[in-house]
Amino acid sequence: MSFSKLALHPNLVRGIQELGFSRPTPIQAEAVPEGLAGRDVLACAMTGSGKTAAFLWPIMHQLIAQPRRATRALILTPTRELAAQILEDFQELGAYAGLTGAAIYGGVGMGPQESAFRRKVDLLVSTPGRLLDHLQYDYAQLNTIEHFVLDEADRMLDMGFLPDVKRIVQRIPTRRQTLLFSATMPKPIEVLTRTLLQSPVRIQLQRRAAPASGITQAVYPVSQELKRSLLVALLERGDLQDALVFTRTKHRANRLATALVNAGIQADRIHGNRSQAQRTAALAGFKAGKFRVLVATDIAARGIDVEALGHVVNFDVPKVPEDYIHRVGRTARAEAVGEAFTFVAPEEESELRAIERAVGQKLPRVRVPEFDYSARPDAKLEVPIADRIAVIRARKREERARAKVNTERRARVTAEGMRERRPRVRSRSRR
Image 1 (cartoon, rainbow, N blue to C red):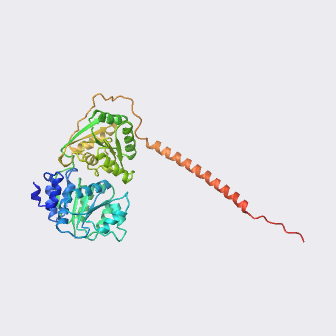
Image 2: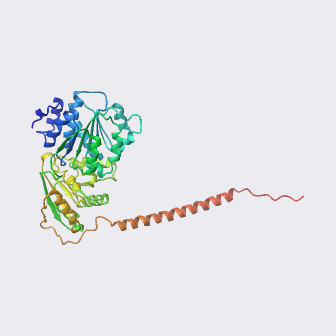
Image 3: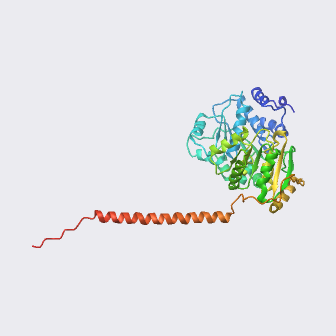
């Protein structure tokens, strides 16, 4: 199908073509005509299939065709990175459309976001929590919303956002177009659709979630203690030019990024304990080629869109197959190609078997020539939780002891001061 058959506004088509789109992807070809017709859409398609454009194009077409000074479109996403990415796509696609938009998320000041509400930008992209923060004030009104998108609905469920989503839905008009997009469709999301959507068009491009066809997947069996050395070896050999590397915890992400820098590899990390400014700088540096490696936790699994990302590395095997699919979906996007490597320690074999059942194939095992699999193990990447708890408890004992000493010192000083200020009692003279 060509773009001419989609009958999009010429100013929008111009922006699409300048971004290098040659033809719609399958999800775009099915969802865009329904969206243009004003129908509700329930779409389930694999990550990296072009879902963002599938809901942006019909909304932008209608905003251009019938301009009004009001905020008419709201998109809810689970993460800050995804909100920022959708806004960037909106601005690039709308280069000739004259549309305005803003991203609403935490970790940054509310002032510029309040200004966006007051200016009545055409489109808002928001995370649920920060939007609810704004909705406490009179300037934040959603009564003019005509198009509502719930993106990555299954991730919303995973992150516990569904109660927030329901509260937000109560603040927008019941007469609206709703587009719900999700990579998977668990039962709670199916239940939610009955209250959110009216006679929706259902688009399901595959029977089960699976990685994009352009992804070459491989498993690297290695002991937990040698994973770091193996990653460095693959980078030094040139098997990995750049890579988005996923760890299971924020602590491991910090330690791994530091280890890579110490090995002479430019790297940074992104996770929930970093400030929004730090996360933005790390992602921007990775996209610009400043860093060869971006180490991330699953907060980034659906919020990072890097053009021509060649490799995704699962440094730790994800606990559930859906997380694997979303992680590896950061590469081979929009029908491109990429490679996904998973480092598997013996204790992670059960999680790997669950992933293989989910994707319907046994993934090939790879051993790296000249890598010493019997080498002396590296220092542990992650301090055991019991040891970390012991350190925390020891630090708190020291803090309590210091506080006790300080309290006793202050009490002595206060007592001495009171004795010095106490007036002397003169004895009465005898008559």
